[in-house]
Figure 1 (cartoon, rainbow, N blue to C red):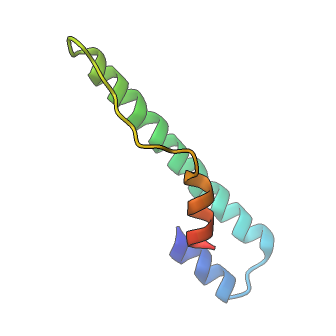
Figure 2 (cartoon, rainbow, N blue to C red; figure 1 turned 90 degrees about the vertical axis):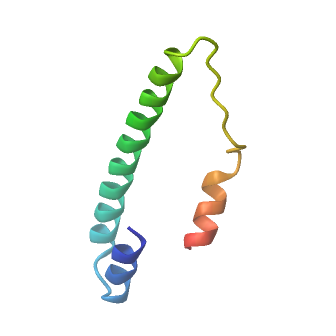
Length: 69
């Protein structure tokens, strides 16, 4: 995703084209995340005392945008 968007910017592609490509990638990633998280919950439900542990996701979007920007 990062490489494709970077190449489009370097080639001075129209903003709508870059936005369209970003939206496509974002939708695909969202779909994958939703499917995987659903599978994780279904798997956990099979256990006697299920526990799901996650790291602190408070600033995940802010850190991603500053790293990729």
